[in-house]
Image 1 (cartoon, rainbow, N blue to C red):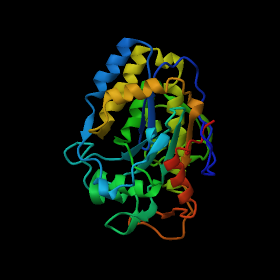
Image 2 (image 1 turned 135 degrees about the vertical axis):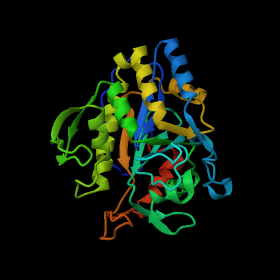
Image 3 (image 1 turned 180 degrees about the vertical axis):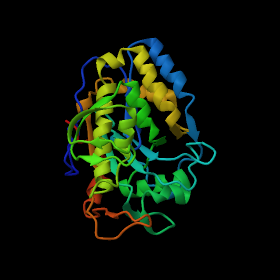
Image 4 (image 1 turned 90 degrees about the horizontal axis):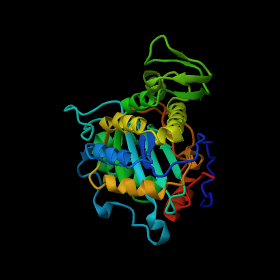
Length: 340
């Protein structure tokens, strides 16, 4: 694995079992990384066919002149996926057309050049950052102010490198994938009463969640003193649990289960026009030796809150600008991977 250069502590990932032969990588809400694999040719074709029906995002990227320089050398083979999650769809029911909508979850998935693992970085939605053409505001508002291209440009300005692909996902993807896996088990760090499931208390400690409970768990923010920071941690916890379920050999070698997972996520997903099913299959083959312990989760360096709030009344999260250059260099040099 590449050397750690960001000083960001890794979060233990879910355990996986051996036997995977290929993987397709995506993340939902920001929120979920779905690594779908199969050992049977029929499953491969099923995944490819289903993926071709996914909604496409036209003109997903800003003009080249407004983007970071292209990375050269060995690090150029690394890839960065931006995943934007939302509670809502556009007025026409489209996920690709989220005019006026905020991105409630913002996740950058870094895939190193040697395909040896994944680093999944969350950016709190209330992070206060410069949004090109709009001054300083919450990063979640970039999507509403200028659509996907402005959201991409804003994130690129933070990580210092280009985003290779972008996906929009709605929160309902958590529910659908969880149910396709028969539920997931988590160890909840903070007890809370659910706003989204009135009467449901999520006790601290181990518990098994069905789809509706997983969705409520991922969306909760008002119940926590830490607001969005705790929600980010909970979403990472749920994503790890989902990855643990998807990466089990009994899941990956079961065509019915794989088909159910793929079928569950695709209605809740929109991707840029440049990303093809062939790209994902090739990526999955290259990552066939990766295990779930090679997946690391972390949050962009932050410096807490200072009493200011967003227009929505949520505490502003300050970026740690002193630590950010180190993170940007890690992205440029392909040393951001924290697993291993």
